[in-house]
Image (cartoon, rainbow, N blue to C red; front, side, top):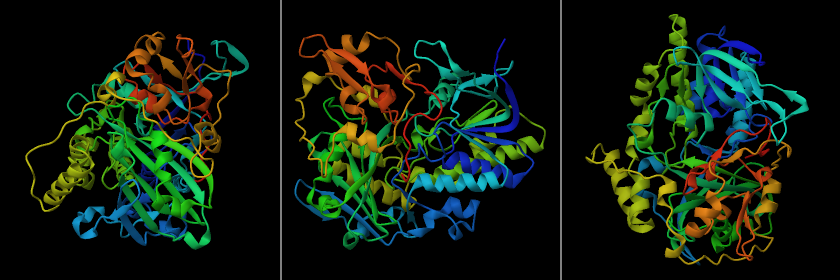
Length: 547
């Protein structure tokens, strides 16, 4: 018999990101009597939120029309929009006239997505939503019919050997009429729901990029609030992969800069972290940050599959919202507005279902409403952009993607949808490539991974079960090292994975789980799909202050 206590609610939402919080607020707008609980694995709301971010406010305008009066995001509207194509030592500006209208940032805002979520959480709590940070949902609960009936939170006080420490506390079961999964990209419960209900049986596999970000305080004379820059080309043009950088002038004399590397790269010697450090040394980027001070660091996987990778969204008792489902507009590098709108549409469907006396059924009306919404129209316009660049490279692929987006903007629908392969499948054997000689960090512009992890505020209770599980403990040494040269040590942006004993001819994988920033890259890119990310003890992971 379970020793866990249970708590009945109307709706439980897993994840206090923009999608989950928008859903919670909309539910209270529909019926203030609804009991709504939001579970967040971070130590506080926003602790695990990381994005560039330039935000299209269209969903915020719909949800909370007066948001500009008190929301910190309103401080910095976008004033300049630039797209640079970088070469090793130079750059050229891509003319705005050649870019589809949807690529404009007019009317958008740049700032901290974490702070936006903190503000949304405050609004939700004012309306009566119960928000519980530090309580990761670790298990999905099902009723006798097989419908989702809620979730259980993670047990606390479990030692690394599985024994119960003196402060042990069992998790709590939250029993709900409906459960929304708003975990973000590659959520571990979402992954289980997709498999359990075959949600992705009729869509393309989801693919991802790894976004790595830093915040810098820069000299006042170089700071231009609202200036937004995106880059493509170097250094990835030399690494047989694709992606790009961003540099946003935000509030308080800070710039947010970062780099996204598509995880479908073939060369196992690629290190997304090292590519980011190289990028910062480009003269055009260095000119902005030199003489400044790096104050924060983080990393997070990003959905890049587009419309063709959106799975079935609803199942008995629950639904996927936000990046758990994958609504990022890759060319625009935006997903907050689509995430929030998906949460609102799910809330509308749940509100109507509960009002009519239904519970734990399949919210097909949510799936249908989303597929006929502006989310669908926007993502269908750009659905071939990512795969065209991935297939044909940065120069030709960008031209083809731009042409395809222009034609779709003009309502000329080309009769094809490009397909994807998983990022793990795209990884090639190491003997087909030469190791990449990345420059050593200089400690001024570029830095090593461990000093970067320190700036993320990452912390985990050391005496707890490892949350990075190996399905077969022999695979790293038996397959990953000899065939792929141990890519775990390079694709992780936090130094979690390292091979020891290499010089002695006995390589052994060591997992430094306490360094994990919860980016989910290992769960995605491991070529043998042998690593599974599960929730650590509540409150563990990064503590981003302003990301």
